[in-house]
Image (tube, rainbow, N blue to C red; front, side, top):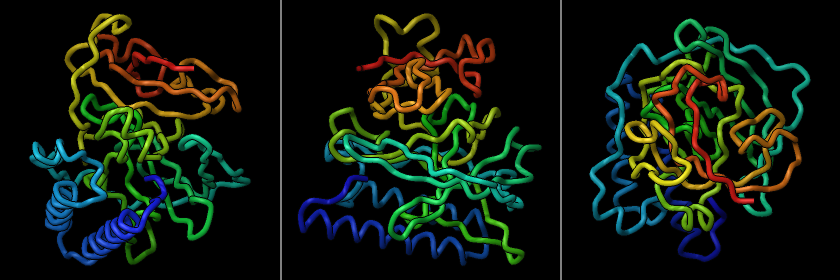
Length: 289
């Protein structure tokens, strides 16, 4: 989310963050996880419907019927052990014109791989206040290709810890970043949300949490065969690709030119045939230099 620039917007953003913090505080003390999840969903739907800081446009609010989620599944609630990440270096991420975010990898989960096919890295967000940040991607056709968020200390998204100190990672509470709900113009003007790093690309589907926000599939030159069912259109993402990050239009040199790129479709017919991305879903991208 971009920094507010006027009194009304500043107070609205402060209210949004207070209500999100209060919501997660209620989730953490709720005795039954699925009931807490239903409460969380209902409150988020209300915020999206009426709040001034909703990522929906006014036109979208008029048509909004609630965010789409998978059914609650207790099999996707975990309390993994954490191993420290040795010699972690600051990771700079472009989040918009002239803006960066610094993340430090500080822990790696131990115990998720049997169910999810891989482990996840937890990051500490640099800067005043900081906070734990856990973004991830998975191989499900109905989840966002750019990744979802599970923990975000800046936004108050914190599911708590067990009595033994292990983090509660309940993927039923996974949610989309704000930029996915609107078109390119609004994203560039209002939302700054990082993509999930490649090391948090889970190779298996995770049918839990929020599903992708439906948009018309791109059909046109460059879409290729298979860009129909299961395809989607996403707002642009700006940034410099990290080394080996093939999502960024094949550019692989850290510190390369700043670009914008659209994921315009996934190609279900080729799923599992290519290793272009670690989740096995080839993308159709449009790049703007």
